Length: 117
Figure 1 (cartoon, helix red, strand yellow):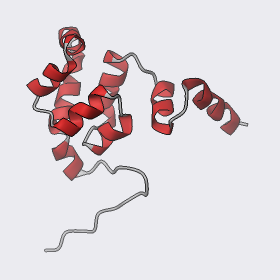
Figure 2: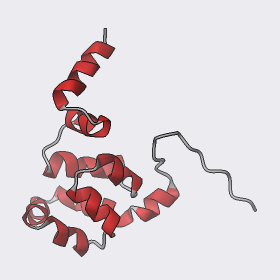
Figure 3: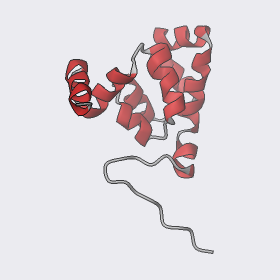
Figure 4: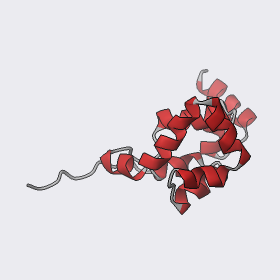
């Protein structure tokens, strides 16, 4: 039996079964942020908390540099990453959009307003 060809979207990481397996530890860690005690533990020592869940170096680097696209590329599921971004880092969707596009939050908001006209 041949495996179907993987779908690609230029410039966009695909969250498929391979990405889910690769990101299992990262997503499990993000899910742990449902607990305030876990959020507080993460904030006190991010790297140690990441290592507690078995994150690899690429995942830890993406966490510590707040590289949202990098987190998706290393297997982060958007639902789970939302727990990190909103629940721990205090970022809203406009902050994340700005990070993803490499502009300030104000510039990102202006692009949204311009696109709506």
